[in-house]
Amino acid sequence: MSLLTLATLSALPLFADPLATMATQSVDGQVWAGHQVSFGKRDVPFKGEVQTRTDTWTVARVRHDDDQITLTQEACMVVIRPVAGVKVRMDARALPANEFGFSSNGVDLKGTSEVSWSREDVDGDGHPGMTVHVDSSVCSGDLYVANRSRTRARAELSGDALRGNARVTVDQEVLGAKGACLSVVASDTHEVVNGPFAYAPVEASATCRSLMQTGWPIDATE
Image (cartoon, rainbow, N blue to C red):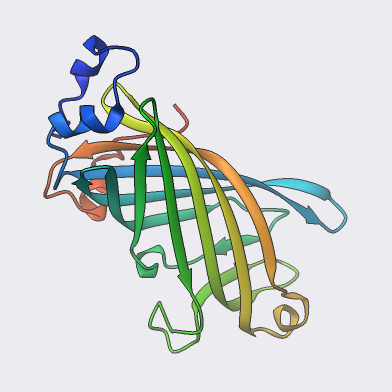
């Protein structure tokens, strides 16, 4: 793996502008591997409030404009930790590509991103929206959902990685369901989640498959 030459950061002044630093490292056109962890809370019948966790792994291409760094990224895998015995999964590869833009305040980086879709069949399975598979001993089936996720983040350069924390507001609309139980109990949701993220440069030829096979090069929780 060819890491971006960010090791020289340790020799820079404490308050060096991060975008100016990145410009000297020729990040434009680089490929980065990303990992984001989102923690939230949800009320579950008979259990009360439980914590949720979602891990997302992405591959991003970096574009550097004068006052902004933009990561155009695609999802490789999304893992939603089971909650109260309910397992949820989706085809992460079908998620729309999105842009994660960072601008500098001279000390660190502020980032914003939005991912959204409505009734369009984003995963190409013949159903509206994205299909979410629900596996539970009580209520299983498929949900067809629209989504709008808005991210606000702060980040800084740390060694050979870009690391930060993100706050994501997620609004999900149920467009339909397969399964009598889910058709009755499923409802729209509004959720705010928070957690760390990290990106590290990789070979320009890297893909989701190749990175998964060799071991993901960055862990947001470390």
